[in-house]
Length: 630
View 1: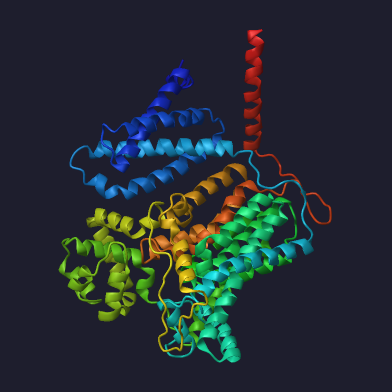
View 2: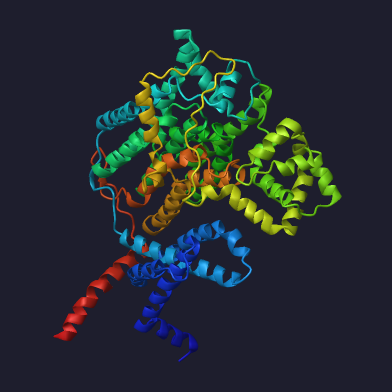
């Protein structure tokens, strides 16, 4: 017998299984204890180990290879997030640093891998929708407007509390650009500024009052957002998703206070979220049609794909880059599936966006965003090196000094926000020098990274930790009201007592356990990663395309986000979460179209056959055991 066969035989024994269960429980509980700072005599560590034993036992019984493989990657992602949060503390230990790191990595990896395997195995046969005939068009339209109306009514108190709407510093810049008090700039998407101007002009023409003109835009934005969410809800309704699930999604959209507060806040992030939701839902609908082997894709979906894709590109600067990345994967998919119309529509939206943001904006004299706006992370890396008083060559010092005072840049470094250095350079330096000497600054960034890699890693952790670790919170609601150069005034339409109660209500997430999870940026990213794993194990691989828009937005924020945890930047992600949770568990199998034609059942995959085989084996084992006893 070869050594390999001997090892396999040992692994298959019950004794080895029990040893792995105990080892996984002990090292995972030790990792959690180290993470939360328990002493070595804290009995809670032992209790954690005991509670983990059933989970590791269940994980050892999972035989589906696809689930086991994807669980390893999910576990690795969650482990890296925990490790990076403690990176500085771990790497600066004088004693036992190697032991602590191994304990951390192995303990968390085993725990999250086992947890993911158990959950994915339990969800393997879970389905959110039921076979049957989809609702007719007239019922879908009634449902669409009814659900949108419910959300609008539930958001109305926030609008009345902050009448005529939330006008922040970002908002007032766009309003002043709109009326000509400031030069047009794409720092805030000019497409959004034009939309504001359109509805503001309507309100101004009717009411002859700045307050009511702003209120006109606020109401239009509330309608837009409610329609976007209702588009998802109606899609779920059409797919015969269970009523309790649709009701839960509607309650989340209607009652979670950030939806109500943001619906009337004049920020680019809100219409951008509406476009991302609709674009992602449209992608999902197209992929579901393809699962039925439909040769011709519906015209409605193609039109929506173009319009929503264009909106994603034009309503946030990072939206254009996120759409580019998404389109790259769509291109590969369309070429393989020979879906030339879908490829053409996606490409057309990108080409139009590039033409608009390039030649069209230039011909209109619209200023481009400042160079440092998209360089937050590299800026913070270099800033950390300066702040830590590392040794630089005179040439490097001179290069940085051409942008702004060297000492001033060093003093304005804030590990959690790029705005410190950025605003200092805007007010006291020459930001354009960076744009004109990109290659020199790229070399500077590389050279300092080679020499001081740990400073770079710690800078990345501090600048981005809110976007990948769940237990990090920052402000959510602005609370300011600006009226620079405009006749604006906050005039609440509710009593002071009611306004105070409503404001207190929307901040309850910071005091009630579990409720705060609905506000957790890192939490929704973890949830999305898990749902991607569930989609991979339950659906065909192309369904992962639905996750690409929000994951691409998240990826661009890791590079360009100026603040460590800015909720509004991730609002599009939060708005799309119900869709991401539905994708793995909704199928068109057994759904009858309105004309009575049955949706075709998908061809069983190798994994499905393996799953059936596993189930058959599991059923046969008790029978065989009973036969032996007889």
